[in-house]
Length: 285
Image (cartoon, rainbow, N blue to C red; front, side, top):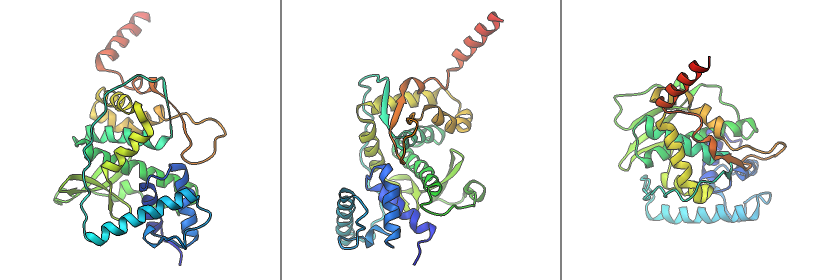
């Protein structure tokens, strides 16, 4: 039996959620699909594909055992537990950060969602995760992991102001579906899974390291210098401006590159600075 797009998308998100490095997710999902394993719940020590790195197999199986124990104690639990999230202080000002592009996009999408929609940090993190995952899915489609969906999510989705539970957020040219839970807004991932802000924040901590506080502060300051309308219209262009520079000829999804931090604050300018520049330009003419 061949997997349908929804099954593969859900499997992709499940593997990504286990903390597997982004550059390994594509090949891992491909190996699982080829072995006709469409859910991590069906994975065990005997059917795990040998083509998957031993460390990744062990990690996936370990996570599966933890989920099995959790589901046996509370099989119908749907609540996403909230992990206390504290933004670390700025420790230093690095000239660059060696990192792959996915966490950079996740952080920026979080900052944008937080400002545009007046969300809490936890709520915004779930939206940021969904944005990054959606673009990762698009990348997976280009690599042939699963088929292309020709429907336009932006054109098909419509907000429902009368629904007290479901939400839709238009951001980065896409529509992110979300639900109002007892812990706040949580974005929906493929397979009806709710994005866990705690896991997302832990991922950002691992990827940014000591530079997390600095990068978050710089992106937040950049967003503060743009009106909501301008930020909404240019959020993706800002990401393209700051995203890590991948060395020419580098292969592999999730390759690391240098995020040059001087770019973080050079895209948007305060209105007073814009006015000053206009005066200087006029005098020069």
